[in-house]
Length: 482
Image (cartoon, rainbow, N blue to C red):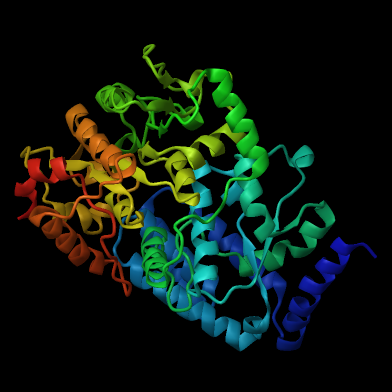
C-alpha cells in the first residue's frame, strides 16, 4: 500500500468510526452544507440574515450554522459579528468534545488560501505563527489540492507557496480527495474570516495583532521565513543583469489599481483600496534622491510609469516572475504598499512596510512594530466634515469591505496626498537606511492611545497600536484626534 493511501486511511478511518459510533450521519452534514450554500447565494442581505438566523435556531449546537451566521453578519458590517465569532468558537469546542473530534490531530486548510488572491497567504501566516507561538493547539494541517491538469486551477504564486508547503500534508489525487471532502467540510478552518485560537476566534487582523503581541513578548524574530538559496541566486543574477550596483538598496512599491479579476474604474466595488500610482512619484523621488532604487510591483494590467532614473517598472518588465515577486519582497529595504496582497510578502520575511492609503482601517491593527502607517481619511458626503480618527478606527466603519458600506454610510475616501506619501517615505528611509528610529512625540502617543481605545471594540480581544503613524501626517491632522 502506498504512503498516500496509508495517510488517507489513518485520517479518515477514525473520523468515520466516530460518526458510526455516535450515530452521526454524514448525509446530515451534507444537507446542512447544502442549505448554507443556498443561503450564501441569496443576494438580499436582510433575507440572507433571516435565513442564517433560522438555520441557527434549527441547528444551535452545530458549528457550521454558527459560522455561517458570523459570515453573514460580516458581509453586513454588523458589529455583532465579533460576538458571533466567539459563539462559533464556543460551539465548535463543545461539538468537538461531544463528538470526540477534539482528540483528533487534524485540521484542513481551505484550498482558496493558495489558489485564490495573493493576500490569502496572510491568513496562513497567522495560522503558522499562532501555532509556533503557543496561541493555538497545533494539529496536522491537511490541504486538499486537486491536480491542476484535471481542474484547471493554478497556485497563485508557486514560489511563495514553496515556503508554506512544508507545513501542510497535501492530498492531490481525485479518489483520496473524494474520501476526505466531507470530513474537510466539518474540520476546515474559517481562514477567510477569522482564526481559531485557544480561546475565541478573532477576526484575522485582530488575530494578527494578538500574534504580534506574543512575538514581542517572547522576543522572537519578525521573519517567519528565510529566503531560499535558489531564490537568492536567481534574484541576484537578475539584479546584476539590470545593472544595479553591488550593495545597492531598493524599495518595492505596490499600488493597487483596478484591473484585477476584470475590475475597472467604472465597475469597481473596491475603489477604497485603489490608489493612483502617479501620486507616489514624489515618494519615488525621495528614495532615488537618497541613493535607492524602486521596483514598482504588480502585473501588466496596471498603468505604466514614466521612465525615471533608478526606477524599474517591474509590472511591465521581462524579469517579472513568481520567484522575483518573492525575492524582491524578501530583500528590499522596505515596502510601500496599499490594501492589496503584495505588501504581505515582505512581512513574511521580516521586512518593514509603509502601509499607505490604509483602508479598511482595521488593517492598521495587523501591522508590526517596525512598520509605519498612513490611514485613508473619510469625509461625510453631505457635510464635507472629516471623520475623527476615533470614528475611522472603530467598527463598523473600520470594517467596511465594499463600496456599498461606504456608500450606505454616506462616506467618501480621501487618498493620501503626494506630499504625505513623500514625507512618510522619508521617515521610512530614515528608520531603515539611516537606522534612526525617532522617539514618539506627544501626538504619536495620543494617536496610539486613541487607537488602543478603538481596539477594545473588536470583541473579547483588545487590539494594541504597535505601528506608529507617519509623523507629518498626524501633525497635519491633529484636529482629528479630538
